[in-house]
Each structure stands twice: as structure tokens, then as C-alpha cells.
Length: 149
Image (cartoon, rainbow, N blue to C red):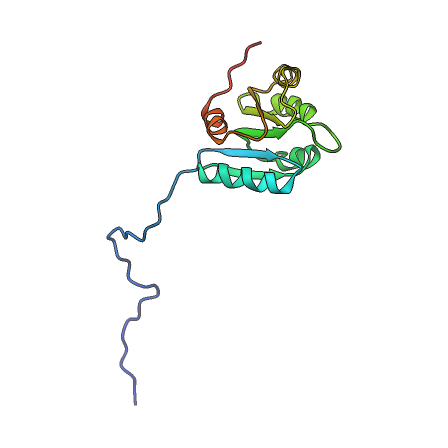
């Protein structure tokens, strides 16, 4: 007894109509390195930049940051100035050399004029004191690096 032979599709039929499943695809605006030694603050920053459509690369030290961008593109970085081990200012200087067009943002709870000048002198585009103002950070990430040298 022979079974009827029907052609069975290998994949389900495609519905060509767009489906509204409530999800929106956002284009990624760029890759943002988040260098923060405080885990809770780092998670908050990652959540913020991800919500704004960026691809966050979170790390806890300057050494981890250098490893993270060794073979990756970086469009912007949010760098805590005071890190354990190598400082955030040293890291910003190295990031500026490797990524001359990236937006570099130095952040610190010690938000005095001297710290801000030091960050800018080492290549930061902007310095923001902690606690961070999300609106100010969002605006900074949307800006473009412009050399003042």
C-alpha cells in the first residue's frame, strides 16, 4: 500500500503583510564605551544609553576599556575620571589617540573647574559632574567631536 505523496513545504509560508506586534525596531546610533567602577552607576548608564538607541559596552576599569575597544569601533565614551588602577584621564588620552572623531565625556563626583580643565586638556569633549543629568548626557552623546587644537 502506498501513501499519498504530497509536497510538504520545508519552511512555513511567509505572510508578506507587515505585522504590528507592538515592537519597534530602532536603529543603533553608535557604540558607547561606559567606563565606571561603581557597578550600580555603570548599570544605570548602560540602561540610559541603551534606551536612547546606543550599543553600550560596559567596563569597570581603564584596563578593561582598552581591551574592550582593541578590535572594536567606538563612537563615544563615558569615562569616570577617578578609577582604581590607571586613571580615567589617562584612558581618555589613549582613547583620543585611537578614536580621534569619537565623543569623549569625562564624569566625576568631584566636579570642580580644575578636573574639568584637565579632562578637556586630555581630549574630552565635555565634563559632567555626578550625579549625572540625563538630559545633559543625551545632548552630549548626540554632539560631534570638534577639535579645538
